Amino acid sequence: MQKCKIAKDICIFPRYRGDNEYLLNLSFILKNNFSSVEFVGFSPKSMLKMLLNRRKSDVLILNWLEDYPCLKKGVLAEGFETLRFVLGMVITGFCYKKIIWIRHSYKPHLEYSKLCYRTICGVIGFFSDSIVTHRRVQEFKSQVISHPLYKKTKANTLAPLYDLIFGNIKSYKKIPLILQNWEPKREHKIIGKCKSADLNSEITTLIKDRLPKVIYENRFMEVEELNGLLSSVTFVILDHEEASMIACETFYHAISYGANVVLKDSEFGRTVKSEFPLVHLVENF
Image (cartoon, rainbow, N blue to C red):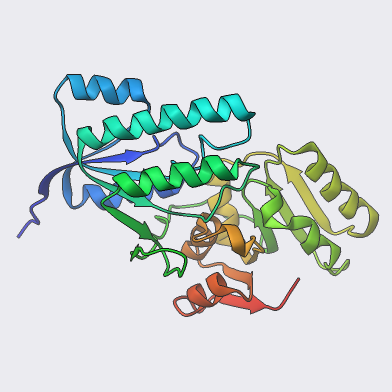
């Protein structure tokens, strides 16, 4: 007997733009169970238009909404963003029957205003009917739902690769710390876009001075190339900052393709090791 889908409209923020497969995987799961699933933007203007059209959807699922408005822009700009955000959330409360907030991190990975961030989190929490995390946390009450794995696609066969770091190159991933302690004779590849000139220079200098077998490519990877690498690699190395991270999309992408993942011994590392035998914990790098 064919499974009947529940007649509900599900909206997901932010819009999927081809660079975050988590959103795509989430939509696939929901489409198997609900009649209508779509990606939406968030602004007072779009929400007001929805309200004036007397359109009310069943559920809005929010991802990373708290990160965008609070990034450092100066006091006036941050104040304006906060007021605009509060107005957007007030209107949103009238447009949706239920709001679900998925929290992926404790704080933004880029420089941000702490006051603005606390205000925005408080506002989202006030309007949300449920807060979801992909692992249990002590800092706030949440409903725990397992993180979706990535849908494995047919990838081009590549030469075997032993160690890999991939994804956006940002300071919270502590790549310089890993390189400072890396064995010079061990091959390693780092591929990802680094927008910080200082961080890029630090990584480049460390490799040039003492790591002849480390390859660093500062560029964005298309998902087909990345999936090919993950199908061929033995170990993916992760040393993300524990204080900022609740879930890690890089981890779930790698584990979905059967790669061994090396993580620092931390609360997150111990949680995922209890679920996945391919997780290996180290005291430090």
